[in-house]
Each structure stands twice: as C-alpha cells, then as structure tokens.
Length: 228
Image (cartoon, rainbow, N blue to C red):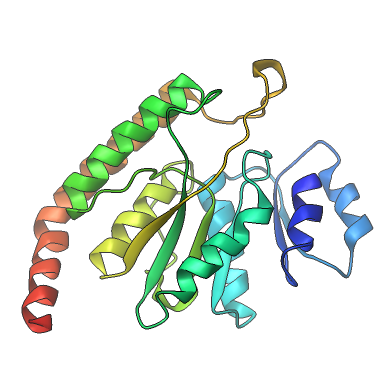
C-alpha cells in the first residue's frame, strides 16, 4: 500500500493490478476507492499476465504512456519524473524507457544479478543493442508503440520478451539510472524461483534467438536501408 500511496503523490491516475493476492490486499485497496483503478482476478497468473492486463486497461482508457512499477518497494515512485523527463526528450520517436539499477549495488541478491546479466547478454545477441538492466520492473511504455500485447509468456520472462519485440519493431529503448531499495533478507518479498524461472528464461531466449534470425535481423536491415 505504501507504493500505491507514494505513486498517487506523483501521478493523477494509478492502476493497481491485484494478481490473485490472498493477504487482504483487495480489502485494503477499498480504502482508496475513487482514487485508483483496480484490476483484480483469481488465481495468481504471473507477472507477465498482470503487466498485460494493466497495459491493456491503460490503452483502453486512452492513455498515451504508462509507467510500470513493482509493488515490493524496491523502486521509488518519486523517480517516475525521471522516466517522464527522458520520454519528453524523445517525443519525436517511439520509445520505451527502462529504469536501470546498479547490478553491483549493496543488497542486490546474487541470483538476481546472475539472471539479469544472463538476460542482458541474450538481449544483445537477439537485437544488437546493449542494455544494462533488462529485468527491471520500473519502465515507461509508449502505449501506441507496443507490439501486439498477446505475448507468448505470462510469467517473469515476459518483460525480456517485450523488450526484444519492441527493439525488432524499431522502438528506441533507452535507460535511466535509478535508485533501488532491497529489504533485509528476512523481510524481502520475492516470487523469483531460481530453477523454474531460469528454465523459462532459457526456453524463451532459445525461441527469440531463432526468431531473430528469421525476423529480427532482416527487419532491422530493411528499416536501416529505407532510413538511409
């Protein structure tokens, strides 16, 4: 709830996706009825599914941009303005702004660092672009520049899939350094499952590498040719 309240101090419109929570979250959100839009469903469907629901809702409401932020408190809603300012510098082009964490920062879980570096490497292979943090949940999306929001995946790996598909469509993916807060080990909330999520990321990257050969690289060459 703290993330929601702090986001309300930064934005006029806040959409909360309640992804099958069973801890009383839905009841707490009733206290903010009229100030936020809530999307709730059961059971828990995964981060990718929740992201799709939120982006589709924002698009349906007629918004041009949407900022995603995780609810675990690791990101600072007060830094939303940094992503917005970066988007304003790129008004003439299609953009996707990612908040880039310092992967070597104190408190960063080692399993997250390894998974992120692994993901960063394959993103470079699949798109030819370098990005310092491909798994951050703090992003600004230009809604009319999104690929079809019927992605293959619904879980943790959906965010890397969205980045790759956007890059293939010629969207300028740029990053902004952000702060990050990691709670002590005993208080940290995380749904990242090392074996299951690493395996799913591996499968998705295998598929994306194949698609990069038959679609990603050829489309980039064609765009560059017509731009020249």
